[in-house]
Image (cartoon, rainbow, N blue to C red; front, side, top):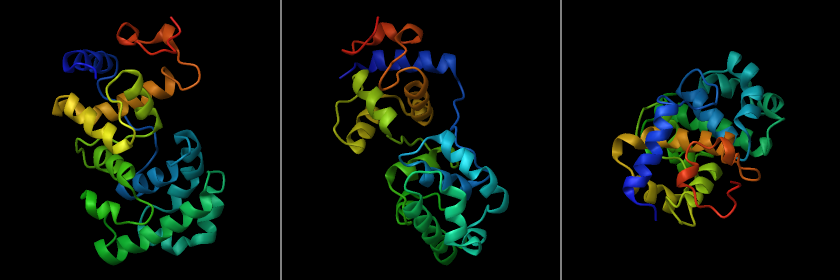
Amino acid sequence: MRSKQEALEIMDIFRQKDPNPRCELNYVNAYTLLVAVVLSAQSTDKGVNKATETLFKIVDTPQKMVDLGLEKLKQHIKTIGLYNNKAKNIIALSNELIEKYKGIVPNNREQLESLAGVGRKTANVVLNVWFNQPTLAVDTHVMRIAHRLNFSQGKTPLEIEKDIINLLPQEYIKNTNHWLVLFGRYICKAQKPDCTNCPISDYCHSQDKKI
């Protein structure tokens, strides 16, 4: 495992380069953020944003989504992978929000995870991005970077989440999710890591390092 001091030095480099990292999904409120994150599973943010550009102009509440209906929702998101199942979950979670929470997205992990199609990663993103809570959503980027930088050798997202949270000071956790995702998306890519432009190359001892 990476030492806490070195992990902090790495995160400080990310912070200097991007002190206010942002989620790249487009949304207008907590509900549309929740929908966008559900849609983003095994899909790119760019692909989700393209599909929701028109959708979010006409649907920005659970009731409007229910009124839109399953088939029309599918037409809006049919370019996204697994769209049939995602559409069913979105209609179901919209009904649940109306029935249980008066149409308001809860700021509680347990309540979020009780909604159709919402797992820990999705809940963590919503809690982090909208409710400003220090949560860490572990996607494929975060998992890969955690392993490459030896922040964690955990086999599951939950193991990696716990390792990183234990490794870093509390005040870093909220932005860590975005820093690692963006780093994995644009620099430390899965197939062709851009090692020549990596700001933390000196700290990397990965076997597939290119320089």
